[in-house]
Length: 221
Image 1 (cartoon, rainbow, N blue to C red):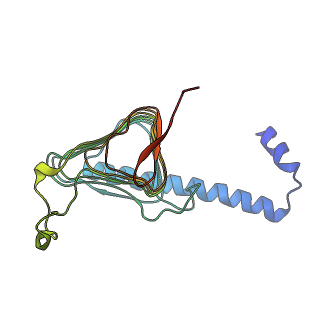
Image 2: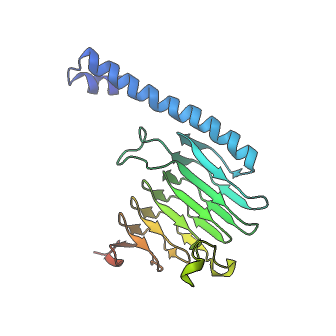
């Protein structure tokens, strides 16, 4: 602590600088404190299984259909506040939603989410441990609207058209990316910002663009 103070004082801060610094830290702490309390109340009410500590900044939307599963691992960070988000504003609060009795969302340990929408209509959506999800990412297991005939697009497609989604361990999903049904992303891979992912991605690569392509293999010399 003394070292931090000395480092800060070498910039010769004004009283205004010090007050702003204290206020920013205080507001962040308060956001995490109240957000986490509200999260645990909602998790208890909906029957969300938490394996360990979950810190929530801002509010979270939880909609869990009876008999479905939402499982959250240890040391998970949920950011639903633009004040707390580092690189971008949050368009909407983090959302976890299941629709039918076979739906399941499982989030591993040490996962960070920022205004993330994870929706399972009937299949399992898995987020591996150590994964970081940048602001405003959408992950879903269904199209949610029929493709054909066009006059039926207001209606939901059959359940058997839904597909599981699996995000591996230590994956980084770039901001505003969209992960569609049936996708598997291998361990350690990175998805570029605003990428729409409709096909499987192997481990240890950087994939980006629309259309999506692999632009780099990680760990290679």
